[in-house]
Length: 92
View 1 (cartoon, one colour):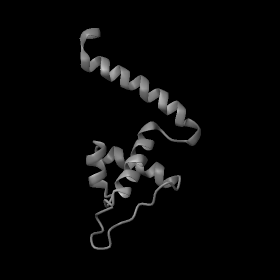
View 2 (cartoon, rainbow, N blue to C red):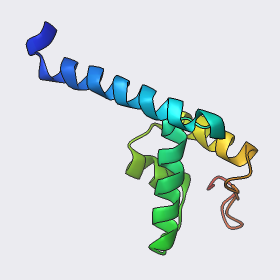
View 3 (tube, rainbow, N blue to C red):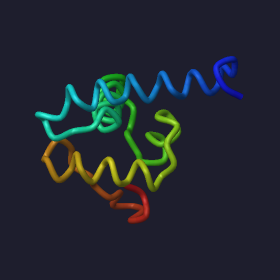
View 4 (cartoon, rainbow, N blue to C red):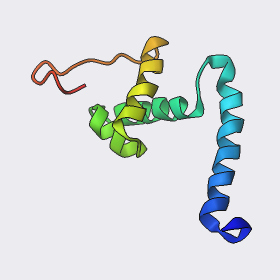
């Protein structure tokens, strides 16, 4: 591997960029991942899409457990409200 591996170099660059944005959002108590999720939710709702966890996980390419942890922070900080579907209590 090493310096010639594109995947390795991209991953390293991604970590540097994420650390930069995490530092920028620190004052707001958020991580860059949570800001990205929040922006995705806003975009989906502005387009008139129903923002279900399953569709949000697909759009953000996050597994549901990671998404759930990030949504919990956003809900705790009153940035979002998570509701259940009255017709199907499993759907959030």
